[in-house]
Image (cartoon, one colour):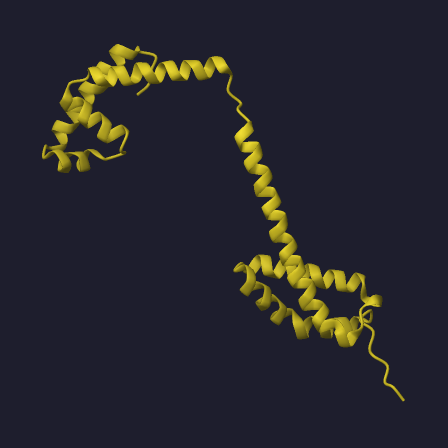
Length: 173
């Protein structure tokens, strides 16, 4: 006489499956994605599905079902992320929240700023550009130019003062 397979709908049988395959399924997905939290979420969701579909799953085939469902869930997440990224790229390229007037003003200001920087004498321009464009500290600028930090501070102060005069007092530099 054939032995009847246990039903996954029975809590004891389901708990046995969970204890038996949860850790190995989690490791399997972790090796695929490299993120333990994501792997745990995927496996937990698969076990929730198993509980909901317990009547249609044969106990002897539960292991292969668990691993196949985990792999498929992981692949579905990857595909979903690809779609989201593709959608974000298309949105990012087409949206511009700034008004045309603002963009024109920004361009005009950039031109004025370049002209103002060009009017600085060579020493102040060098210090200003190293500090503000290349994000160097005064100490680094002093090492590059062979000057003292105090001399760099004086040159920067003079450059900022001249730029304020040219660009207007409402500009914060």
